[in-house]
Length: 196
Image 1 (cartoon, one colour):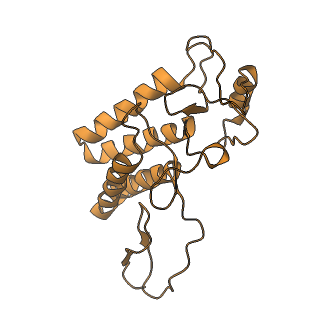
Image 2 (image 1 turned 180 degrees about the vertical axis):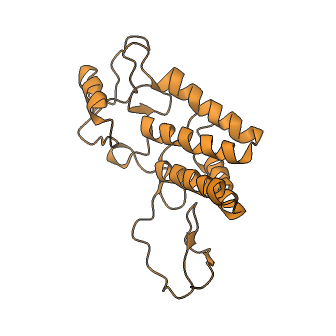
């Protein structure tokens, strides 16, 4: 088994690690998804915690720094989720570039928790606390006590339309809440939610 060189030409937040004897392959899906980037931070941090190998946390911090540069909404807070390869936001509707999601922010909380556990850096703690605050104050519904699945950039609720996909494991409560709080998908207007 050869050493693991870094392929710098992939263009993603997480560099592909390839064995020396593996051929270079074509990129099949080149979009950036913050949900996926969060798993990179999480697993790389866990790798360092489990093995003591500092390469894991080095790459986790690089992905974290990249998200702070490319995915943070500096106007309203939180993180956009769906990007093209060059980090431009994907389009609206089914492409998902116009929304922020419960799923992405929950997984960022998970990733930032492990990152902070590993590094103990004040910046990682601050970003973790920011995500927790968003989850508690914006994403969790104050009356129903469940997470609201999707939001527009300004944190107005973006209710379910026929093109909305839900994350695994939490579909039923999200769908039930979304059905109670219908909107007109064509206009993008939101219903008035108790407690919002």
